[in-house]
Length: 117
DNA sequence: GGTCTGACCGGCG
DNA sequence: ACGCCGGCCAGAC
Image (tube, rainbow, N blue to C red; front, side, top):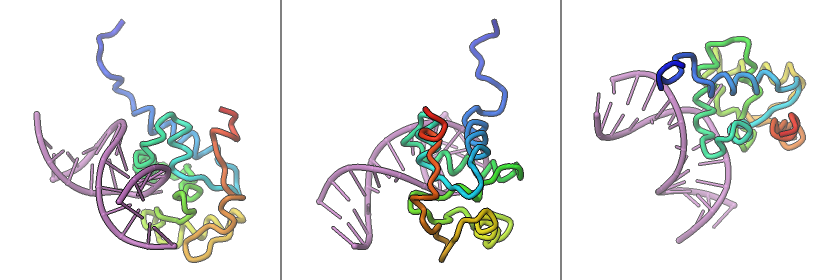
C-alpha cells in the first residue's frame, strides 16, 4: 500500500466532468448544476464550469453543449471565438438566439436522469 | 501559506 | 420581478 499520499493523477473531478460532457448527445445541452449534481457536488457548480476551462484544452470535449441554468452561453467567451459556441450548437441542431438556447428545457439533457442515476 | 477568483446555482429581502 | 449573498473545490499570485 502506498502512503496516504493524494493521487498524483489528474483530478478525478475533471475527468468525471469530461466523461459526462462527452456523453451529451448531439442536439442536447446540459447545465453546470446538472453535471455537478451528477458528480455529487451539487453546490459546486462553479467547479464544473472551471473544470470546463481545463476541458477547453481537450478539444475532443463538446464544451459548447454545456450552458448555464438559464440556457445562456456563458462560456462562449472562453472558446476560440465568441461565435464558435453558438455556431457549433446550431450545427448540432440547437437553435440559439442572443446567446440563449431555444427550447432549453426540451433540449436539456440531465445526466443524472438520462444515465439513470 | 493566506487570499481571491472562477464558464454557477439557489435562496432571501 | 430583481439584486445581492453565501456556498463548494481547486488552482494561481
